[in-house]
Image (cartoon, rainbow over all chains, first blue to last red; front, top):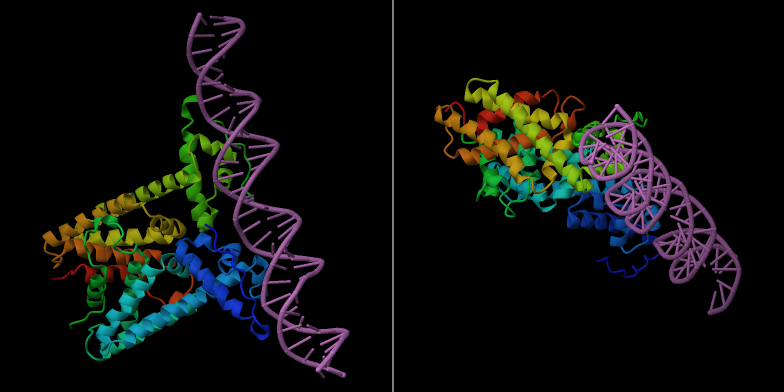
Amino acid sequence: MAATSNTRQRNPRGQGDALRSDLVQSAISRIDETNDVTALTLRGIARQANVSAPAIYHHFATLPMLIDAVLAESFHQLERIVHEAILSESNPVDALTAAGRAYVQFGWQHPARYRLMFAATGYAPDAAQVFTLVEELFQRCVMSGKSASTDPHRDTFLLWVAFHGMATLEKPGRSDYLRLGPLDRLQLVETTVERLACLHP
Amino acid sequence: MAATSNTRQRNPRGQGDALRSDLVQSAISRIDETNDVTALTLRGIARQANVSAPAIYHHFATLPMLIDAVLAESFHQLERIVHEAILSESNPVDALTAAGRAYVQFGWQHPARYRLMFAATGYAPDAAQVFTLVEELFQRCVMSGKSASTDPHRDTFLLWVAFHGMATLEKPGRSDYLRLGPLDRLQLVETTVERLACLHP
DNA sequence: TGTACATCAGTGAACGCGCGTTCACTGATGTAC
DNA sequence: TGTACATCAGTGAACGCGCGTTCACTGATGTAC
């Protein structure tokens, strides 16, 4: 089934840039729906956006540059999601767990895209923004006496590695990968936070 | 630089299967050297093995079946490495740390291949063998009174998730991904094991 | 208000490439008699 | 021991495909006068 070939409405004069974000969104839809990073082709993205392939070159010089834009947007999404999770809780310990849950669920909901984000090298600055968000939160846990950590920077990294591991694993509920049975993985995030963050000091 | 096109020595009569394992090894070399999963093409593997592309069809019906063989071999390698690490230590707690270190280093040494192993669905049985190795070891930690875990199955999973997260991250020493500075990541494996496995009860 | 022109957001056809796969073949090696 | 033949591990040429990219173009929309 090819995408419906509705002729896309042409953008009015000053708003040619509208297609730019449409293309990024189309690329995100494509990788999320197919769950396959190899579906991220220039022609495939053009089809998804109901546009001819050469039209892309008005907005991106090459396919890798379009994918760069997809990655930047994805890191922004992830940061926003984690940030909102943190704001949703009033005390820092609950916020830390909420951040972990939000992070992990982002990975489960967009597996191929999440993998692409961390397979690509050169995204240190974008990843670091999310990391910093968690680090500042963890500092608050320590300062409020809820964590016995003596090395918050290192322990934030330990936490983040565990979140990353959970996010990278197959979404739970599909099959019992590793014969894990009915483990509630969101509950596991909480346990991981308790132990790695040295809570209940 | 293309591979040298030395004409490969033809296998004697009864030993046509020798090419089969050569092809698997060539595929592994290719993904490990290029660190790029898209380098795993049938023609590329044939070039690496100094063989014409159609020769592969004497041994594998399709390219995905060759890649299946690569994955099976890779899981065997990982299991062997972790098993040897466990055997190298006499007490179960040290063995648990050694297993974690060995696991994580496998991921760092073969990044693209490790990602491929866990991106592919349908490898639960192979992954489960490694998991079971760690689980049995952890049971021994609990029985010997070194771990206060009340749910070894779940806690093995927590450990394994953390190992997986560490293995998936960029090999340390290249650049300071996430501005982590001089964190010794192998030391971090030890700390992670201590906390997630409830050691020093 | 009318008209010539510039701008701009695209399109359609074509290119060369590497891919997976198929097909007819080749030539050395073992086996039957 | 000699020879005809079957087996077998490959090879070389060709196919159709989707890809990224280039090029000349089109036609609606705004602007100058």
